[in-house]
Amino acid sequence: MEVTLQITTRDIPHSEALETHIREKAEKLEKFYPHIMSCRIVVELPHKHHHQGRLFDVRIDMTVPGGELVVNRVANEDVYVAVRDAFDAAKRQLEDYARRQRGDTKLHAPVLQGKVMRLFKTEDYGFIETSDGCELYFHRDNLAGHDFDQLAVGDTVQFLEDIGSEGYQAKRVSTGKHHIPGSENE
Image (cartoon, rainbow, N blue to C red; front, side, top):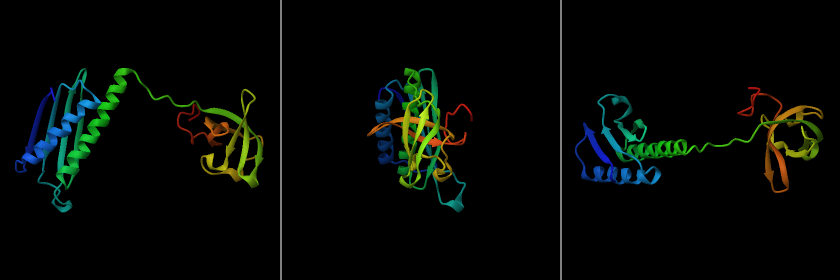
């Protein structure tokens, strides 16, 4: 790793094996974000929490262009598990930071509205008419809240459009305004 790496242990005996393990984990972080400028890892065994067993705390501070990323107080009774979990969290933060820098954002499907046009209750499916006049299939399992039996022809529903094996269909169908994240009526 070309970055400045600092490993500090507090209240635990020095261990070459642990330090080597931490260095290997730190080197792997560059795969997720190659512009890390410095990385400081603190592993400690605080004297508190005796009633819960002795938990190792791991903290990782990473300096990156334009900011600092911190993984704070990942704790476990096994120091190697605590280190692994802390570095997993650091990896996720670096991936998110890299995505934000690239301007990548996760695109969510728009929430659409339509009306139930046909129901086949004994076969557990129905069709929704979209605002542009198309009909989309939906199955009972695609209903948020599982209130298929309360649905009636003419009910207004919200849904996400998705591609299925038979073509476009409605997923996450909801009659309420709080079932679908991103809904403009929430």
